[in-house]
Amino acid sequence: MDKKEIKKMLEVATGNLFDNQLDIFSFTSETGQTEWNLAHHLANEIHKYFADFHCDLDITKRNFSNRRPDIIIHKRDSYDFNFLVIEVKRNATNQSDEIKHDRDKIKRDWFSNPLNYKFGAIINLKDNMTFEVEVIKNNNMGCTKAPAQNIYR
Image (cartoon, rainbow, N blue to C red; front, side):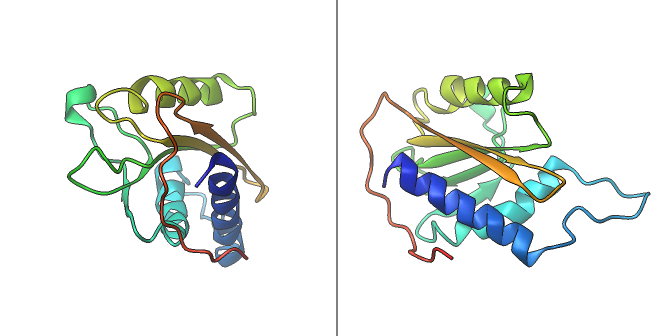
């Protein structure tokens, strides 16, 4: 699986989120939408495309200053199958400090030993039901064949 295929799957999954939950940004004035809540709903859509992996949300990495990626696609209890780490943003501009910070965090924290995630992604969800997906390949390792479901829309 390559960067282009992963980006396509993430785009389709994100589109499915918006198609399946037209009211994802609709709340009463007492309720505020959070990136964590959006990440939860998005993770459910993404996992459909990576069914042979586990999909975990907001996991604390104790040996890494308790850093927490938003979504991880991996197999538990092994570093060998750390496939994809995803950071979710809401309404960030494409060149914002938030996006740059997450891009740097993916490369620094999740691409390094012993975690060695194969790919990272930043998904920027916007209140107008549009989104941007950026996928980053860990160039310090070869591409691993990853099973995925072929269920493009």
